Image 1 (cartoon, rainbow over the protein chains, first blue to last red):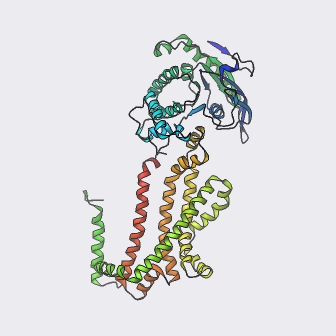
Image 2 (spheres, rainbow over the protein chains, first blue to last red; image 1 turned 30 degrees about the vertical axis):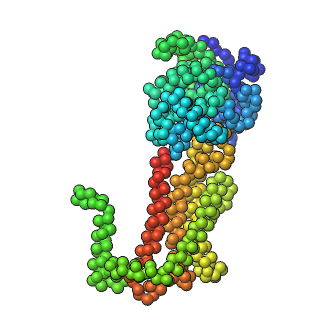
Image 3 (cartoon, rainbow over the protein chains, first blue to last red; image 1 turned 120 degrees about the vertical axis):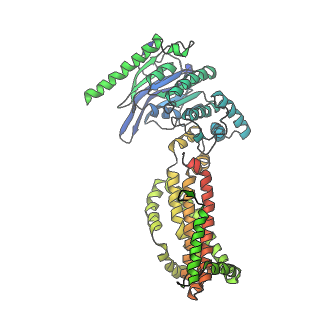
Length: 273
Length: 250
């Protein structure tokens, strides 16, 4: 395991071509409340980066700024070397509450991103069917979101993000509304999928175990105001069995290290109160 | 409906009421309530008269035009009130006042201003129905889930697609409820307007029948108006039920 302190922009070890996205000194003020202060993060191409932190640390705000759904008060987001001014086709978002159209079946929901881009019906449905199979939802094409479990809804949300073939997947606590057993299965499926699809993923979570288990890089954020406290690279060998992985020293050390980091801030807050 | 633990179909209740009505009518206790059988006989009589057909046609025209106006203005004002805070603030209070005020009181004023013609009936229907349509549309559009609009935006939806493919469908249950309530009020509006104008339409016919104590004809006409309002409201309810499953899971 290797721990990298939060570094200012320009000193990143990676050259620009290796970065899919870069957040440079962003801050966000809502009314008079400061949610984010001077957040800089590099997102290496093809890696899964988790944004981890307690509620209120601004991790979802950071993700929405990267998505172009929220404007930063200061700072800049670069995606493939271009500054972000709004949503773009190279980024696809997976929502915590799935955000499926309740009046449309799974097939139309999964194809909806392509529908908005004006892809003809036959073509977009063919692509959607392929991704429905890929996320393990085959047979549910004609079902409506209300007929699906939380896990299945999120698979539909993921399939929708995959159909638009964006290089960067933005996932906002995608497994938070999914029960524990399904979450593990889902995490494993996601890793298998990413191994095939070669995407850059930015993943928001508040679960340390989840972050360590799935991430190449974990960015720890703290609150009041939200800022980067540390970047941890778990360096876990994911080639073996998933259950073994969860017992490996590298995995457990990373979990401990992150927990200690976050605990400092919890203690700080108790002293203040 | 259950009675002593037995399942009884709904029409039994209706049948019992009709039977009671017939008995009271036959006993001749209350002059204003003729037996149901005589009402049914005059049903045929009323609907075949020229005066009824003319009255029905005038009323339908007034109703249709008034509702058309209500839908066009109610839906767009409601939408603008939800989308633009300033419009909501400027219009909201007035629409709420009119929505809960007795519009009938304004009709005589309308007579004085725009006369006894078709315009007055159209405006009456409009004034009865437009407010609830605007308010329900506003509520529907305001409460479209933020995550759905963010989702559409994140996939690059144009403004037009956002309204057409997301906002409209998400707001549809409230919009339909508003249209159903507005339509029922529109039926009231056309009848009340004509009663007050008292020279035209179904309202005039009702006035004539009651003045001449033609009670079977009067009741037959009342039942026709009830039936009309019921059929329209049921038709809209049918659409509402079709979309109900997603309305509750938004």
